[in-house]
Image (cartoon, rainbow, N blue to C red; front, side, top):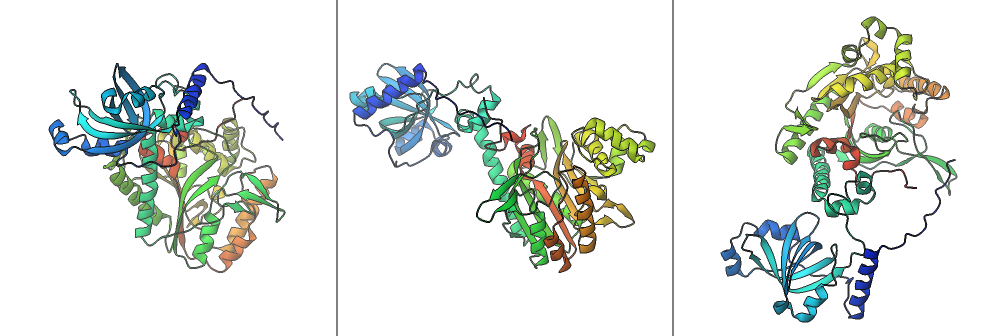
Length: 501
């Protein structure tokens, strides 16, 4: 067991924080409700800026556009008896203009108790300054919340990437483009739902706590249910539950699900992540490839307006059809190993153990997968379907006709990342049990990422699973591609981070 972190001593307030706290007390003594329970508004900052930015100075004067807009103060410029300040809603900025002869001496003086970061409501009329900037001429200003800590400087305080992820709220306040990433992600998920709903798929929910971990080759997180006295595992994949539903007659199902895998962190990996998984009866992995091309190209057209995207400086063309290459041919072409060595299991295993010493119970199939991850995947930039992985590392997939050592499976790789993984699902209960038993043997030899024998799932197959195509698509990685972000932590609002000392 790791040592529990010691509780932190409470931090002493800084001089700036003391000043802000004293201003709060002064406002309270003056009878100001600094944290009211509700506020009326006519527009958000973004709505006002979007609706009226194109209006001329004369149009605004003629229409006498009255607004009541809340927002956070991000800048203040005082000029004697007049003050300009900018409000933000985390997306757009809007200027406000405060004059003592309009709001009165008392309210004008009280405004000096504000700080950068405070949230205010401004009521007044819209006009344009001599420079053409849309501005609210304030008739009254009301406090909505006091910011008790100074905001970080734009170009200094938020250079610390860790600070951005640990305090995402500050990241969103200071960097409007970050909010746009998550709006894009939300739109991505909504568009995925529309795509599958239109095709007759049923969205379902399956358990997140499993008595037996399964559905993917990964090490699970463990938990414990006190009332039942039962050890449980956080879901590593919903696959086995979704296929039970297909057995039950729900021929097309999908789930946008959170998965948990007890693995390392990287630019492409977070222990808690989001997947789309879908299953279609009377289909195979070729049908899944066609559906995947259709899905991702449609998402690009809807959300980005084109079938070409840019990621990390590279242009990716999503125009169909996408490249298709066989797994072993790709490894032979990019691994640098002589073809004769690739056919020598012992040589391949030795090479994989050199490249990935953390791997346990490395077999020939798993060693080939290590070579694929190290040498092939980083070189596949354009959308590419990699077909026919070793059956040994595909325990839930059907074997290829005429080549039982290979699986009817593909991985979709884009920009050097695995985006999707799909099978023609194994439907023979006897063979599935044998595969699970083989995996159990690997587990006894130290490989914690293998499947456990799930007899209930085997029983479900004995009732008859029709020919089925199934696929998982990484939502986080798809969001990385669409938002052009180099790290998965950029597209997860609260990624897992090591605790600070």
